[in-house]
Image (cartoon, rainbow, N blue to C red):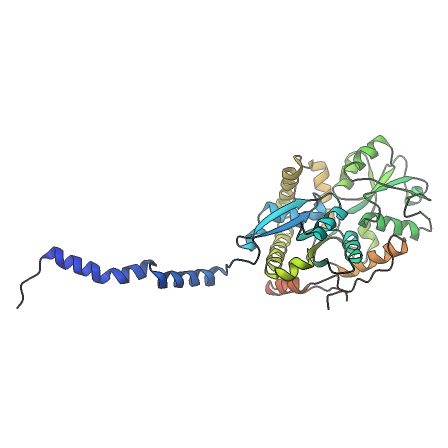
Length: 369
């Protein structure tokens, strides 16, 4: 029988023998590290995306609520797993299209008319509409002392944001349907169409240099707070009271090179829209907080409260209404008959919607082949 070993030596042998098991159990060692990494990826679905950043453009308008709230609440960036969002604010559609075409912007929230113009001018290769964002939120607001009925608009000065922009096209079409004529270039005719930046329109209205304006929110509600009266809500002119006011577009180059990033952004916008519709009061406050962060000034409640419910937040791009708006622009002789085949690519959006248990949306026959 061998001599008994000292107790300290027995303890040392036991610890040494157990060390490999201890290291593995605690996750140390190359094999355990790999297993843990796999488990984490499997548990969270996380993996790095193909771009280190994505540049997203939007307007500081309530009709761009998906962008405002999605960025403010981090709901878009949350889906990107480390890919950084670089937000860029624009005041007009042409400048955003220029940034997209110039390669300094990847994804943008923008109105239908700039989307059409950008697509047609590039003959197709630069952009795709990949989702909807908002419907409605456009009103004709007038000075009630000067204009009491729609017929009273004849001979008056009415502002729109920009020649050929979404509201300008809609107003010119409305004028035409009244049987009145206006030169689309100069804005002169039976009604004087005064193209005025939305930031300037409230002052022009207060000073009396315009009699009213066909404008999006929150400009419409600003005019009401200054004594204006809503004479017409544009939703009344549309079937089902729906029309696209904001799309999401993407650079085709970025879509081709980084479809995973585009899909992640769309996951974020779909979740943002769901959150906005489920939490309208919180979303309204969030959008206003983002506007304050961007401009240094929040909207007054007397402007924000009536403006917010007039905007419908939606994933559906309402493609048939964009087609109608393009027909109006042709009718007004602002553009030639466009070939819009391929302007939409809703493949990734419908993939995201299907995974979320939501109905897919239509491109009205204008999808990429």
